Amino acid sequence: MTKTFSIAVFHGDGIGPEIMAPTLEILQRMSDASTAYALRFEDAPAGAAHYARTGESLPETSMETARNADAILLSAMGLPDVRYADGTEISPQIDLRKALKLFAGVRPVRVKAGQKGPLTLPPGREIDFVLIRESTEGLFHTQGRGEVSENEARETLLVTREVSEKLFAFAFALARTRKETGRGPGRVTCVDKANVFRAFAFFRKLFDAEASRHPDLAADHVYVDATALWMVQKPWDFDVLVTENMFGDILSDLGAGLMGGLGLAPSADIGLEHAVFQPCHGSAPDIAGQGLANPLAMILSGAMMLDWLGIKHDIPAMTRDGTRLREAVEDVVARGDATTRDIGGTASTDTAARAVLDTMFVA
Ligand code: ATP
Image 1 (cartoon, rainbow, N blue to C red):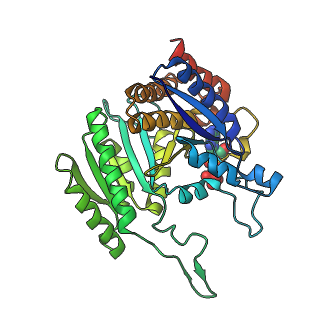
Image 2 (cartoon, rainbow, N blue to C red):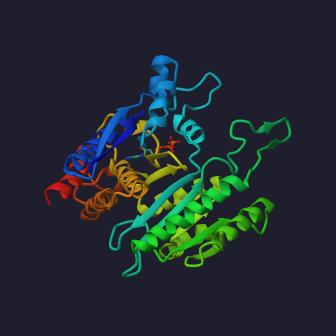
Image 3 (cartoon, rainbow, N blue to C red):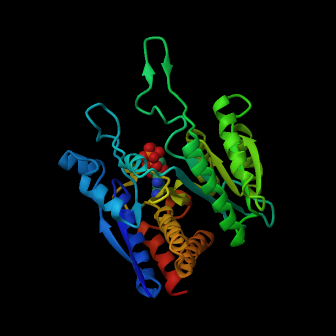
């Protein structure tokens, strides 16, 4: 029986609409071809351009569309010259993260053997790990509320038992799925700074408690500074990494760098009920409207959405489609004849997206 999923779509600002349109076209084609699932897209207006037009950055109706949806697809939001009266940037994606309690920021880092990138991988080596960034507390706890006086400034790092327990349970569940599907050895690495900060010793203690519930999976710890080093020196050794918000923010850009740039880096922000799928990059206003944007990070985020929905609702055909879409993107990147300027090619946004579609439906 075909199950229909409603997908809230935030087209966003800058290059957002340009990369969302071909992604929806691909997903629609996959939905049309499937007997197991169907996707129904519902537009959710929001963002900086919307704010400039209406005075609202995330209207309640769009929030409702997101809340009622089975999953949320978001391109990129925010424009440097459109700001709230207090000077802060418009970022409804952060409001969604908080409102929907999306505690796990999932950032896959993948470089296939032979794929061009900043690192020369030893023969036979591939990079295939997932960084999970806690996304609701940590050093972002006092975001926008830090205390600043003439002579000092303070921000507070918050680690709670409630969020950490959910985060670690999520990390071990992901490592198990990856092990079962042959993607990884089944190992979770806690990235912290427990040698210096008591908050991270607490974080690590909670990690160890969750690890003890999974004797079939391996667990270890690495300090954040060593993690940065090893992500460059031996990134193929990692499977699932889990860390605090600020550490994750920094390491996920390092991960995007390993893949060759932001245009190839997808992400998901996942909670117990809701999930947002969006590329790691921003709205890139410097190249908007020129057909130069790389759509592959957005398309890969769509693949993650299919994977997540398929696992959550036990529809293996949907998870398989997620894998098929990811592999089609990887093929296009490996061939290199239809890639955009940011990753060394000359193709337009549409040509790159068309190459993915052709790989799936013609090749
Ligand atoms: P934000 O703070 O909203 O994350 P940012 O200031 O970090 O944004 P981005 O908008 O991500 O910046 O852009 C950073 C650089 O990467 C820009 O030069 C931009 O053109 C480029 N870039 C980002 N995304 C893409 C993409 N999909 N395709 C091509 N270039 C991109």
